[in-house]
Length: 176
Length: 176
Image 1: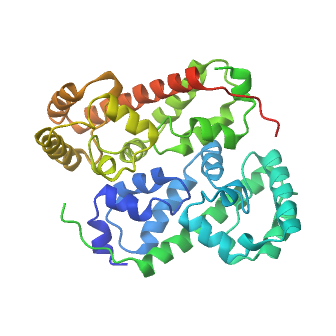
Image 2 (image 1 turned 180 degrees about the vertical axis):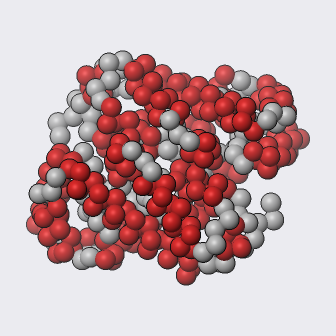
């Protein structure tokens, strides 16, 4: 990523490009724009992670609650964001057997009842059987530990989405 | 609004209903869900306003940057949220003459260059000529005063969106 080009983006272009690196939280990219200039992609990522870490517990839970269930209603309805669709598909969650889907949805419901936020895991670093195992294990955790785990997964997802943009983007300086 | 029904919504249902009372910031409703139970609609509104007020300056600017320009690119592209489309339409912004549109877009661009966030005004409490007057006046303000003004307008918009939900909704208790 050409950071000079990134740093010259106006806030609308910046949100167009980075608005979904944290799922459905464009407010995060919109806030981080104030931190320009960024020296490197890592510098941008660090600013995003610092903003996430600076949230109180309720704010962290708010970020998590914007994330769709794995193999959940948004996948069924076809309303996932492009990024989520790609990630869930790569992990094999779009081709579950009926039994696998029912099992995952049942565990997801129990998890949400216990913690008040969805089970979040970086799907691209796992596959469907590993995801089911992790869900069954993490549901046993204490709420504070699990909030920490889930936020760390948000960061892994964010890191990979930034990498995707890094390699795919043809960011050009703004003329505005 | 039947607050018992609202308080029984799970977080997904709550975000479905209130996720856009602050434009494109579902994270706000998702965070405020932690504050249940709400006694009244005013109580819910107060929780949202307290969350907005608790943000640092950069966070407030982040909220503002998620709001589309009045008579701007999202209106042209047809990508406004339903709420924004209705509000801009009611204020007469969908039926501007070419000269009015060019004038508003020019002032919007100058405003964004000066402040780093868009001109925000509660369109439903104004009409197109009042909006143009206010934009021409507010662009003269100091940045700190204008950040305050814009956030107060976000709250007016939020208040009216909550009122709309209050009168339109048939919230039913969740079975989940």
